Length: 213
Image (cartoon, rainbow, N blue to C red; front, side, top):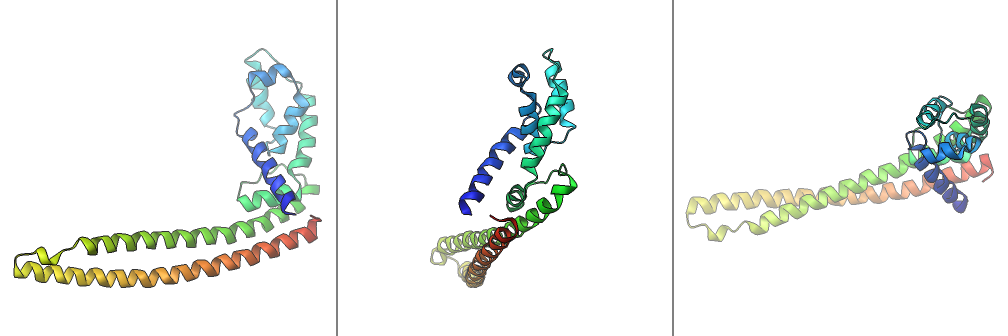
């Protein structure tokens, strides 16, 4: 299953890289592989209206696309895009869904997307918890540096030494508070990580049962 999911993820990444293009290149227009082009565009969720951009782009080079061939390929590409596995992969990556799926495919695609989104949500909570730990670690480092740099013995005046000691006391208090918060944040990170592993295993198993992966 993991190999299948990984393979799908790599395919999706490659297709989305293609989908990021504004329209088509001159070389694609000259090649005239309209069916393959339509299939590739649909495979990354491009709607049929994208054909207008293809016509416009190729028109600049004096080339008129075969719209029938493009649309024939586009309909085949929809079959690639609207699979449960692609929906699951997009959901795990929290990527925007395209509305191109016909009713016959949309239900399973959407359900798989939502399952994948559950995994993304769990993993995102781990990322948030990890960011909180790092933030507190940085804060603690800064406080400890400030405490180290505060040399009250160098103060020559009594009032200055007194004020310096008060400042050190306040800094120590902030250090203790931050250490407490950091311990709590690390515990939360561990709990969240374990929960994410459980959720991921459960959702992967559920998706496997439902979609036969």
